[in-house]
Image (cartoon, rainbow, N blue to C red):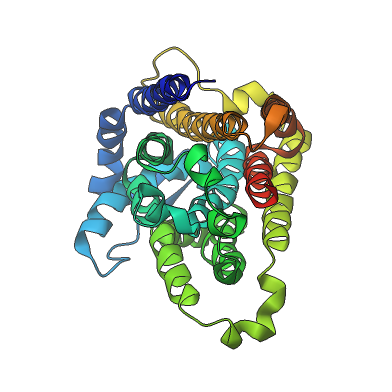
Length: 349
C-alpha cells in the first residue's frame, strides 16, 4: 500500500480516537457530576439509606487536590461503599484493569525511539485523568502518540534493539504497580470497614503520580544495583502476573455477579438524573471509552506493522484476537496480550 494511503488511515484512526474522547466526555457529563457532588461536599458526609461516612478533610498537603477530590469521593462512593451493587462490580473490574493500562503506557515510554514524543510522558496524562476521567484523557493521549510519534515505517529502519523497550527499566514496574495501584484498589473495594475503603479511595487519587515518580527513580538505578532482583526484570513475568490478577477479577465478576454483563459494563442510552444512576452511567462510559481507544490503537499498530512489512498477513488475526480474548480474559489482560504481540513483532524482525 502506498505511504499516502496509510497516512489517510492514520488520520481516520486519529479522528476516531478524538471522537471517542468527545463521546466519553458528553456521556459522563462532568458538569452534572460536579453539581451532584455539591450536597456531599457541603455537608462533609456521604450518606445513603443504610449508612454514612464522614469525608476526610485535608488528606493531601496540597489544598487544591483536597478541594477537587473531595467531590470525587462522592462520585466513587456508590461503588466503593457498596450502595450501588452494579457499580461495585463494574468499578472493581475497571480499576483493576487500569493496572495493565498504566503499565503499557509506561512501557511505551521505555522505547528509545519514543524519547521526547508524547508517549515519553504518560504520567502527565494518567494524572490529569484523575481530574476528568481516563476515558476522556486516554483516547486523546493515544491520538497524540499516533500523530506525533514514530510510525512502523520509522521503526522498520531501526535495529530490533533500538525499537523495543529498554528491559533494564522494567524491573520497577511490577512492584510499583502492585503496591501503588492494585493493592489500593483491593483495599478500596474489599476492606471490611467502610472508613478504610474511604481512606484508600482518597489515597488512590494520586497513585498515577506516585507511580510515575517511583518508576523514574527506579529507572535511574543501575543494572548492577538490581542484580539481586533479576526476577522482576522479566517482561514476561510482569505481563503474566498483572494479567493473571486482571483475569481473576474479570472471571470472578462474570461468574459471581447476579447481573448480566451488559448491565454491569454498558451505559444506558437514556439520560439519568438520579445521582446513583448517572454516576453509574458516567463510570461505565469512562471504562468503555478507555478500552475502545486502547483496542483501536492496537489494531492500527498491527496494520501499520503489516504495511511496513514487519507483520505480513497476521495483522488481521491479531486484531480478531482482541475481542475474543476480552470475552475470556477481560479487557485489561487483552491489552497486555495485544501489546506483547506488537512487541515480539518488533523484536523478531
